[in-house]
Length: 184
Image 1: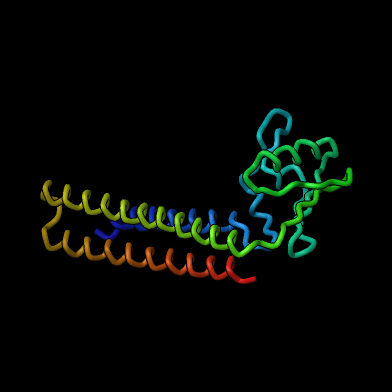
Image 2: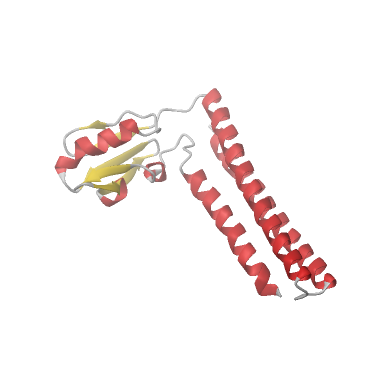
């Protein structure tokens, strides 16, 4: 019976991992190369992640440096950054592109924390939906007489514990990210 819950635990874990990945893209005043993860550059007709067309480094706490492997990509990379929702104007010297991250204002930090909480709430809803799907499938097994009522109650309890575990992990991730953003 435990293997029936394994599927739902994996789904909840993927939801949690996805949330953590979204959190890495939210900048907290320090330069984080992961903010570039979702930005694609036209490379020989194919949308390609910036990390695959150049070397991305963080030489200073508030600067990301991109050194394209092909010099003719500088304009393409700059254009991709400009049209993204990053909100930073790239500068280049013909060799490398530099992104200077301004110090975040108090208001901007609070907006970012709201965004973090919104993403976390969406993740919690997803985890609860997974629990609901699990409970529905357990009830179907009961109707088909594949399991007893006691087994269903036991499995529902375990599913609830899994849900509680992932909800608390999401809450902890929100707390950590919020602290990170609000720290000046």
